[in-house]
Length: 99
Image (tube, rainbow, N blue to C red; front, side, top):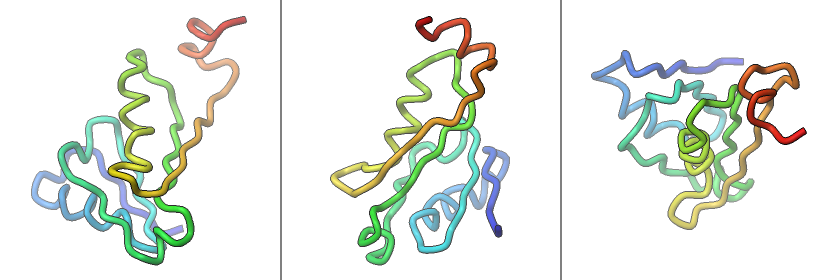
């Protein structure tokens, strides 16, 4: 699937990439340092089908970062959803998850 990778190295185009992330058919893969300070504006079509869906693919040592990522979905009253996909043998997961 066509996508854009945002890793905080695109200084000039970072805000533009994030701004377009709320459009229909867009897939934006971002590191935890990318896209801060730019709102994702949802198109009417995206809003109608449930909004932005955020997928966490790796837990971070600071849970605050995970909460910030999940917070990208459903900001300012917009619809949205999120989910975490983690391997049961992930080092952070096994060290910090309740038995």
